[in-house]
Length: 184
Image (tube, rainbow, N blue to C red; front, side, top):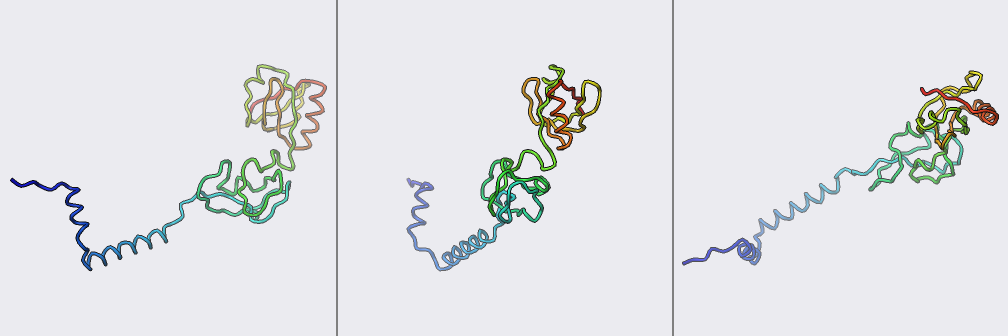
């Protein structure tokens, strides 16, 4: 009666034998090819825009101010496309090589301003969401601003981002009377 060896027994027997020269060369070639493959393997990082130089606050970004790099892990709030950042100002100065995030950007562009508006219709205030586009209308029916962006809402008060000239007028009118908005 013969006992057939198990797989672990076969492996132990193979490992105890000295390797032939041909097998050693084959293993050396395989390890060399593996090392070359990992050396030339493409970097599969996360594309992120960083400041190409030290940047001051408040000046609109240009394509020359941005550089695309690949980071080993993602950074929350970063951008991979320069069209998302060109023309937008920074809220604070930034050093070269620092990833640009949504928190680093100024909340309003330089030619825009934010104005708080008290709405005449409370039901409409509940419907409006941040990011919506609206036109601002006075009680007399005069259009005070067109295509303003809703920045945030708080009860009957809506904060709008609109051109600086219109923002001053809308804010002044909002002190005296509640205003209406039309959704776009």
